Image 1 (cartoon, helix red, strand yellow):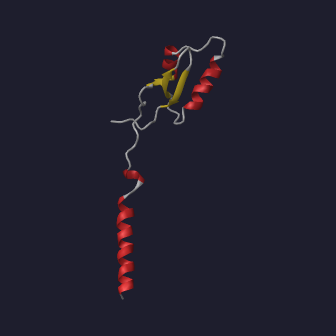
Image 2: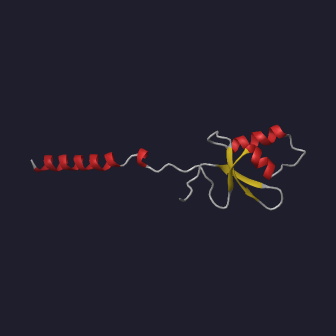
Image 3: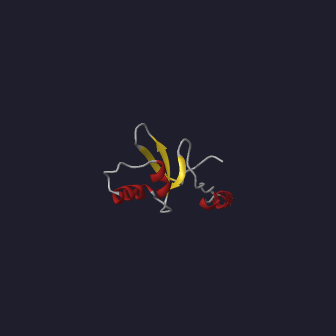
Length: 97
């Protein structure tokens, strides 16, 4: 009798614990950029702020930028590097409030 009560109590405890924790209760990330990245910027804004070398075709540049845009919203975060290079990441990040 004691074993069945103990088993029932442990099952109820597990249900209470796992029932209260769910992915839906997790805080969704803001659509922002972590410091020190700028943005989020559209591809047009990004190309205006960080002009690419003229010898690279625009279609190639847009394809490269699109490869970083994991959520397909057309926004990226950008960090300017020395010279004319940039570091681009997608705009969904866990940004502190």
